[in-house]
Length: 141
Image 1: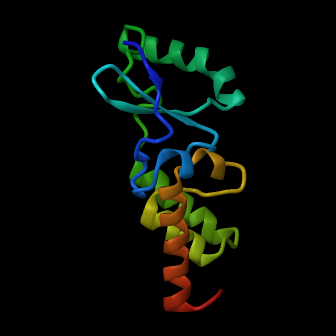
Image 2: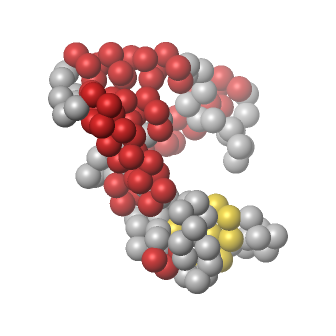
């Protein structure tokens, strides 16, 4: 299936309602569109993950008796709810701002300066709005 870059004049798929060229076009990822009009987001892989990938694929093949397919989860067997509970607990123990924790719980995102360029404009806006919501209700902490 051939993918081509989404037109800068198209409506941005992130959901802000803006044109792609004024929304997510200059981020660290790109939207691609196939011949049927299906849109995917192409995000660069972190070098550490790229280094780990062959081993993870081998482990998947051992567990399942076949190599991973395009729709398989490489990190299967992870309880996401438990992982999120542990993350929140660790954030509280290490003194992370309550507004940040609230935004993580509400959006499922971890927004940092290191990954901001890889998040859609909508995701950044939602995360920041959740933090503002917490501060408006509870004050700065």
